[in-house]
Length: 289
Image 1 (spheres, one colour):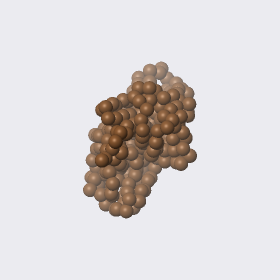
Image 2: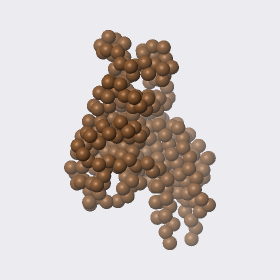
Image 3: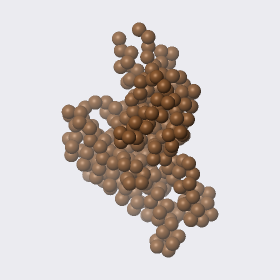
Image 4: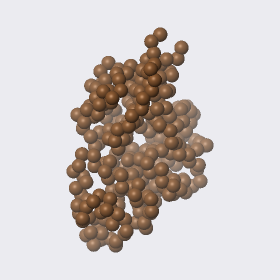
């Protein structure tokens, strides 16, 4: 029996991580680029996927967990871009949060929360019925995410510039981080190609030593994300621990505030590689004798 090869992708708003497994071994690569259709074009996606193919190989099966894949229309477009680059491969596309669930929980009842560039809550009950809250994109949703927090800080900086808010030390860090001489120059962040990545990246700085304004913004976003989590828990039933993942949760301050907002529910930080775990799961299933 010939061994089937697998490529697994885990793509969010700022990164694409890829694991490839074949009979000859395993390779893993990371690309500093987002794959969410709210910020990148189909042409750009095809070019990135073609690069992945060139860096790795043509697999038998591709499994891809992408942010922005919760809507069927977007899922079809993402699948189409993959098919263009990997014509002939069997392709499965799912939401990034579903990929996290498979990697962190597997099957059965559980709840997972992503807070990276965007934010989503997802869980299954005992029957395997899925429940999702959030993840509706950076324009309408993503409360508590890296992009959301940074955007709110920039919005407040602009209000300070217009005399509507008092000064906060985080505004000085904004200017230093983005290497601009005035607050109004920050609006030019929206005209660069990878604006979501660039804007979201500031949240790490903000969470290191949160100022009064940052604490207020973080608590607002976390409060909304925690309410989404509790609503999903009502549907799934209780779980031993809620698995959390993403750049925001790398901050001890963020994790502490989120745990407090949940009212005592236990959380566990998932630090595995979603693409690597999914690749191994699919490879083992395909090649099970």
